[in-house]
Length: 353
Ligand code: NDP
Ligand code: ZN
Image 1 (cartoon, rainbow, N blue to C red):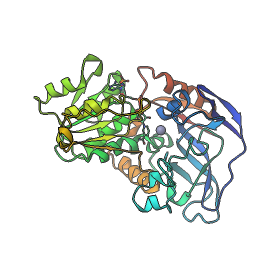
Image 2 (image 1 turned 30 degrees about the horizontal axis):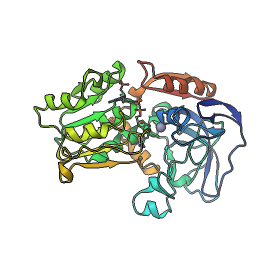
Image 3 (image 1 turned 30 degrees about the vertical axis):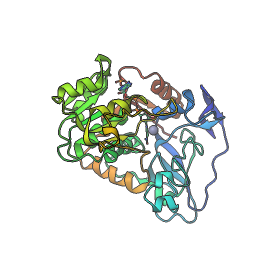
Image 4 (image 1 turned 180 degrees about the horizontal axis):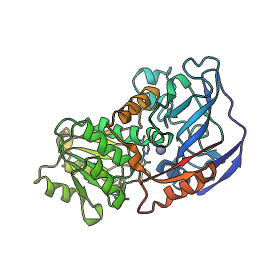
């Protein structure tokens, strides 16, 4: 089969590979809509998971089932499904402890283009099909549904990790597609003011549509100073990190109130340690919590999120700024994600076979 892969560090290209085999609990799908991700860029051009040869990229997609294992109960050939970026082993002890994203070891639920090949191929493999596929409901387009693989569940997870409550004032650092979904997640969890940090005009416009009340440009000076000025020196209850750097933790601690919490879903790609400002952290007694995690993944989360889209609670189609037709456009779509032109939020590729 034909596939688009990481050939090595800083190198991508088209390759031929064997079609994946289907185990008794698994499914094989053909993609019908795919989206590249900032994480693919981290993988190829920033060495996030080290050097890899001929690793097929991609973990955001909707596909049609072409084969199911003999133990799969709820899905059959021909079903069109949303596939989460994180596909845990649901019978693992980690899943029983409530941390399915770490099934089999830290980050072990992240299988596509990490532990195994990803979705940018004529066929791709899904482990534990009953636990990890969700039927695409009527009324939801495959293109919009690709945003349920990773962008919506990850952005919402930032709000979950921070424990946003009614009336919280919230800063969202980074308003790429993940941060924009964190903005929406915070709105749905009852936030009062939402300070969205970013600069790209398209993202700023969509952040306001999703419910951001204030926009902060991090290029105009310290985020902390701007937040403190806007809150009369009080700081905020929650900070959702969906962009920035390792130093963002330092700033986030400084702008949090005692009792506040950080929810981080941002990938931290450099340095050995993360700095925490000792005094602003209440010399260890400030009740300023730091929660950071990979999104949960799995079938029920996709089904719940799809219900939210159908009920009009969140419209992820606003993220789709660039649309492509045909499997071969994957390459152009990924390069767009790498170069991040000012008008980009997220590209999506529609595929007909
Ligand atoms: P984008 O690159 O599209 O967005 C990043 C955002 O951060 C932009 O709004 C950008 O602003 C802003 N930013 C950049 N530098 C700074 C800075 N110094 N201070 C404050 N803000 C800054 O990324 P995505 O939305 O696609 O992804 C966000 C992160 O989430 C990535 O690190 C990705 O790897 C990670 N991720 C994590 C997952 C998980 O499960 N935990 C899953 C998927 C992704 P500007 O408007 O100027 O561009
Ligand atoms: Zn992704």
